[in-house]
Image (tube, rainbow, N blue to C red; front, side, top):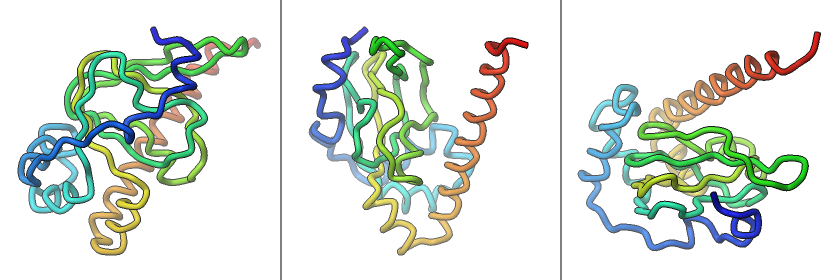
Length: 173
């Protein structure tokens, strides 16, 4: 696992070089995930114009807890570890996520700093939508923007329910 110092010093995925990929190929990556069922292929092609592809190697730091840059990451290929600092400032792995899952969606909605760090557990292909692109999408294509916003809200609700269920198991009576 990466160290606390490495996590705090990292610039995150936006500092990496984007992979230049035609919209159709980005669309195929999106369609191959769970996102494919919520959008038509025509909608996916429009959505793909607002996303950038990054390919990262294992142990690459996607973003760090406390980072203020707002962007959503759709995992197209590979797996990432979600890491949170404990009360002793030690990084602890919370979970591992794979293709079709998103990370960073809360930052698009509330603009607050990152609540956790994310590190590539394997080599990964990641599609990134910045807050600027999210806002542009919502202005240009409000129907697709609404579907995406509802998808984000549903995912956040699922994470909250899961966290609440785990929390109750750790509370005393």
